[in-house]
Length: 225
Image (cartoon, rainbow, N blue to C red; front, side, top):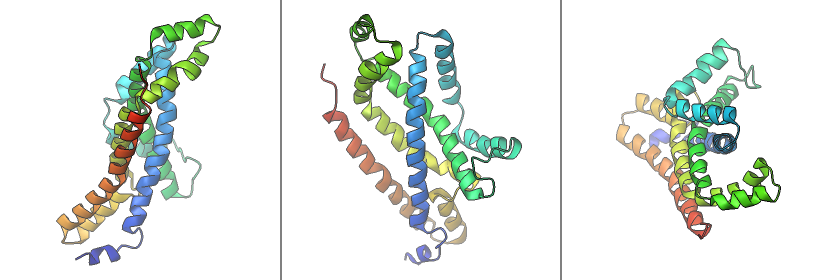
């Protein structure tokens, strides 16, 4: 029944899901960093930074991810010649471009999740921190963000799960992840339902433990008010 799996050694099913995991991990790290910076901009006292953060989030959230991923390929790579440090390695170049597109898109949702956490921190704590001489960045680092992150583990888990599923869009620019292999298998094999079930199960294995673990952490680390 599963003979079709043995026909695909390059990449194998496990190899394709490994690429999916790598896309998820690198994109999650980049999105968390960029999303946190965007959230800091959105609550910044500097109007220009607030305006940039607000404009970025509102624009990027309303652009389809496929458009962003294709732009990183056709726009950055083909038109502007961006090689992402791998001019001769096409697989690595487009993998990095896919990560860049996923980070640019997902960071907008990470930003809003973190901003909602920032809004849960009592204003009096920030005012007290400023009263003892802390700068805006120090207030964020030492007072606001530690509490904000603890209160938004659940929403960030949802963003991470969505990111894992969104990695399938990278197939649009030829990144050899799970969705691209599934498409190839469906085109060449007659077991469409079985192939779909195998890949659906693979994504459940990736996302379900993530949701359960981060859900447990959310309850364990929740800020008691």
